[in-house]
Structure formats: structure tokens, C-alpha cells
Image (tube, rainbow, N blue to C red):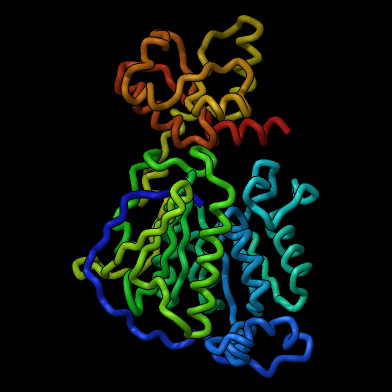
Length: 397
């Protein structure tokens, strides 16, 4: 659900190959289905045959969050017969600003269960398949095999590259969307017929340079704009109508209400995709050798805070998030010094030398960067909270 980075693109205009329908038509529609989908059937390009293709289609949606929410609802409303959902998260109050498939009564439930119930309330004829797991290199190929098209609403780069490579190895198309603040992107990738995600973004950005939605925020309504476009592309692929976004990137600026289009070409010099790799290491999220000496657990931090309260220990707990994040939730006894000031050196004067420092952010990525900057500046006794304030909150329950 995050992340806009400058794309590697081409302005060369090339005609798109005519793509065949992905899915064969299923059996004739029942009377209730004819009524339900009559507005589709009236469109000559779709008709009854196109609707039968949709009912026979199997679509896998990665994530039941900001993009997955509108996408799942519109796929169900369109009559896509089988919807698979991959997610391992639970519904939180902060999700409801944009994740419209969930409600207040769903807080604390798994997003899979909540999404399933909303889908079946909208269209009981849909077969909903739940995959309660974190997608990784060990399960992606087996999972993707059972589906015709993948909708990638993931909120991190590691998953995006994984989805790309698995889809390329299996010869499957996938629809990709990304949002951050007021900006959105959407495209179709299909290595068998055109460019894949690596042709747009050959390398991931350096960790921490592109904030996630949890770090940078997202305009809630933007999820509907991009999610609806993703479903539009999936339906076109399934039915074989229109011109898809294969080889084209749409960029939407919600503040100016403007769409622009950039052409994407295959990179002839790019190495072929032959296997799945460790995508967290590829994206620089974790070093190949994790230094546990740099980390402190939430349990250990709680003990040290208690000792500090009793005067038995002295250290500074530094929150490296942004001020608005600090206002929403904080660890008692922490001081706010955002990462940017640590990285550019402007905030170093606010940190005492010779006193142990414990850093934390939301999940551990920014605090790891702050730790590296402080070590380079000569601060020796520095650790950071493993899992960030998310781990702290989970430990505090």
C-alpha cells in the first residue's frame, strides 16, 4: 500500500499486443445471476459470455488492506467466481479510515474473516478462499498456481518483487497498485507478453527513503481510485476486452485531480528471472548476518525502564518517528528526535555523549538507520528496539 519511487521508464510509444481472454466461459448463468449481472450483460463488449468468463475466473488478491478492500468488493460485485485473499493481519481502528471492507465490529478479527463476511454479504455466490499466511519465497509459487490473475496490493517492496518474480516464473499476469499520501500508481505486468515490475523499478529504494503509509500517511479516498482501476484491469484481462495497462504506468495526483501516463518498455539487458530469492535481503531490510547485539526486546526495554524509574539505571529512550506519530502513541519516558535530524546531524547536539541510548520507531527500520548514523558519529553505546513500538504494544497487551 505504499511507496512511490522514481520509475525507470521509456517514452517510446509501442502498440500493445492483442491479448486473448485469460479465462474460458463457464456454464450458462442461472436466472438470479442473469438479473444480478444484467447491467454487464447489456454491454456488448462483455455480454453473457464475458460474464461467464468472470464467474469462471480465479483471482488472488494480495492484502485485504487499503487497496485490497475496494478491489475485493468490486471483484465480488462483478461476479468473479473465486476470490483468494492473502493476509496475516488483524483489523485495527486506524485501518478504518481507508480499508472500507472492514467495520468497527471487526476490530480485533483477522482481516481475512472480516473481508470474507463482507464479500459474502455483497455476493453470496462467490467462493472465497482464505490464505492466512505471510507470502514468501517458500509458498508463492504453489499459491499462485491455482489462480488466473494476481492483484498486488502489498504495502512493501519485498513482497512486490516476490509477486513479480513468482508471476514471471509461472507466466501469469498481475495487476499492481501503489499509494502514498495523495499519489497513486497502477499498471499491469506480464513478463510473457511485456514488461514486468523490474523493468519499471530495476532496484528497490534504499531502506527508509520511501515511507510506508503507516509512516507517511495516505489519503483514504485514493484507495478507492486506485483499487477500482486495478479491478478494471483484471476484468479486462479475464474477458479479453479493451486495451490493458500492460506497458503503461498510470500516475494519479489526487490533489490536482490529474492522471498522467508513462510508457514502460522491457529492458533487453535485464537478466532473466530464473528463481525466487530472499527478498528482504534484496531490499536491504535485514543484513545477511543480523547483529543481535544491536537489538533490545520489548520485554527487556520494559525491565530497563522500570530500573530507570527506580534510579538503578540511566539511559535515554529516543523515538525517531515523526511528531504526529509521537502524538498518536508513544512509549512512556521517551523523547522525540526524528530520524531526519539524526541523519543530517542537526539533532546530534540534543543527544548526550557517554549515556546509553535506546532508539525506537514504528517497526524497527528507521531506528536501525538512526543507529547506523549515530555509530558513525561516534556514539558507541546505542541499541534499538526490535520490532519498534508495534512490538512494544503487542508485549504490553
